[in-house]
Length: 199
Image 1 (cartoon, rainbow, N blue to C red):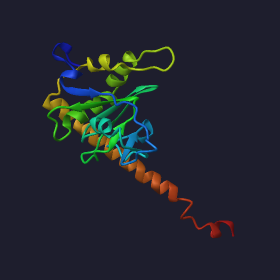
Image 2: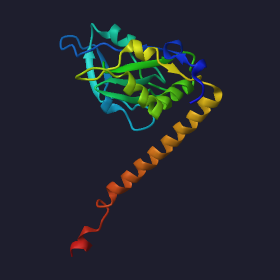
Image 3: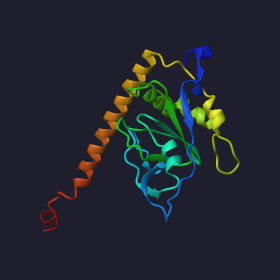
C-alpha cells in the first residue's frame, strides 16, 4: 500500500461498539430481537435476516443502543477472528450483534461507500493480516476493542472508494452466479427421468 504517513486511526473515522450479552427473558417477552451470529454471515453481499430470535422486556433499551443501522460493518473478534459482513440499506432496527464481534459505524456515510470500503479492506489480505496481528490469548484468541479502534487505515479517497466499490460489485456478481449454478446442480437429479434410466 501507499505511504502510511497520512493514515488515520479507525476511531477517528467511525464508532466502534461491542454489544453486551442479551438473553431471552422468560417472564417478560414484549419485544422480539434477532441476534446475529457468525453463522448468519454470507460469503458476499449484505447480511440477511439473522435466524436466532430472542424475546425481551427489561433489556430493550440496551438492545436498542446496539441495534444495527444501515451499512454498519460487523467484524468477528473472538474465536473465529476476521469474518466480515455489512448491514443492508434497509436494515430493521431489531437486529443486534452477538458479543463476539465489533460493530463499526462510519460517520457521514449515507450511501454506505465508506462502509463498503472498510468491508473490502477487512476482507483483503491487509485486513486478515491485521486481525492476525491484533489477536491475542493462549486459549480462545480475542481482539481488544481499544487496539482495534486504534488501527491505522489508509485515506478513503474517491479513487480508493471507487476501486473497492468495483470489487464489491464483482464479488456480488460472482456470488450470485455461484448460487444460480448451485440451484441448477441441485435440480440435476430432481429433474432426471429416473424411470427411463432404470428401466
